[in-house]
Length: 218
Image (cartoon, rainbow, N blue to C red; front, side):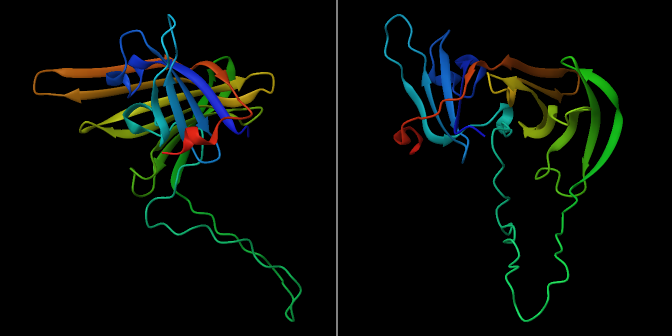
């Protein structure tokens, strides 16, 4: 995994929209070790760039995780156990047991083509606490087993938004990363239905080797 990922988005398509003037582009740099991020406007017409985020965590539509780094544990959850100590001792070790939590019931809905790749379409149902286990669908390449697309169910303004990320290899090293974001939220009133929809590609994706540490200190 590279140490950093950089990409640009129109500010109007982000949660920083109220802090940008019309037509502004924002560069995000994510430190992949911990997800802390730096964001600044992209200078245009000779104007200096403006720092918008320094050391905070960014998220996708409705606050859904972006998929760049492992999600932090649910508050109160215990840390994973340390690796077993297999050093010689008076008693012979006869087995090592690992327990794996089963969080979802998974159904193969079929085989479909996504972005030119043949994929298993896996539908997921959380077995408990759906907000803590928000994955609802995965599209997995039938040959490489790469996740080509995933979908979250995420709370948003009293309804549940469906947030979808597309993944693809990027750059000379073919690093697998998010390349497209799509989100839909539908609310129903007595006589009307209102749909909010956003869709955007991530632009100028690169993987810098070095960035200033100060950019990731809140």
